[in-house]
Image (cartoon, rainbow, N blue to C red; front, side, top):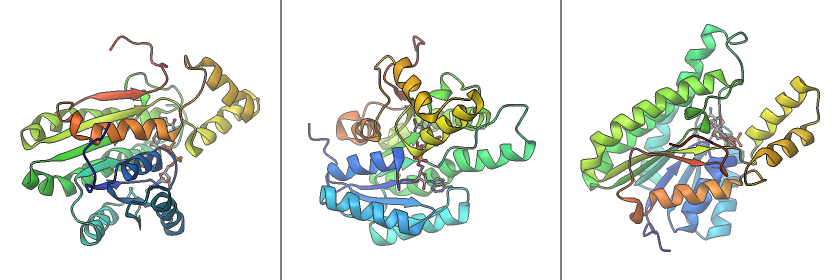
Length: 263
Ligand code: NAD
């Protein structure tokens, strides 16, 4: 299926690896001109080159820390200058550290809100004026299955993503008349370094090996495996496509059937 986004400009943040990179790869494969960012310049440049070589698309890498509003503004200015105003924005950032109510200090809440919620707010504010002028835009936020079903050991992530979900749902209504869709993609468990780290933490807590934890993650998933970032990226590309113009304000799980709720 041709998604009709060949030549569109896409910005995917926090995308040198993992789910962000999976989204960037699929958008590049659809012919988008893609900007990606991460904190480490060398890693992001290398990822951009690899994606460009694999897809033949124009892919540029930028250094930016999603915890820092000034760096987000600079990123948006650099992308605008090198590629143009983004038609498609995929917001992503590294996940907040794991922890429970007992182990989390009050100061850590604000940091998590900056990383997970405010980064998306700044990015969206930066791209919507041009989208409104063009009367076309696609905003996709990477959140988590935890907005449907909070994860016990990820208190900060549960809290900040719930706020982001409320923000996205509200602005989806306001931006719909301008031809801009706003959706969230909710990963279950995908094979990335974040999951490797969480598996390592759990292995230490439960006195097991990381390999055993990953084996358990696969065995307990209804699909008997964990996702690949390309599974996730394919869903992002579809939501970015022309055919998805009437889908907005939604939270789409990409989880192999993990979530058991009806809605
Ligand atoms: P990952 O660790 O594999 O990749 C994270 C990417 O973000 C890397 O490119 C890293 O360089 C970049 N990054 C990290 N902190 C950054 C910052 N402050 N500023 C800019 N870039 C930054 O992680 P992932 O598994 O791809 O996860 C992406 C998001 O999805 C995270 O918020 C994570 O919590 C969430 N999530 C992931 C899963 C999963 O199964 N992998 C499940 C639920 C939620």
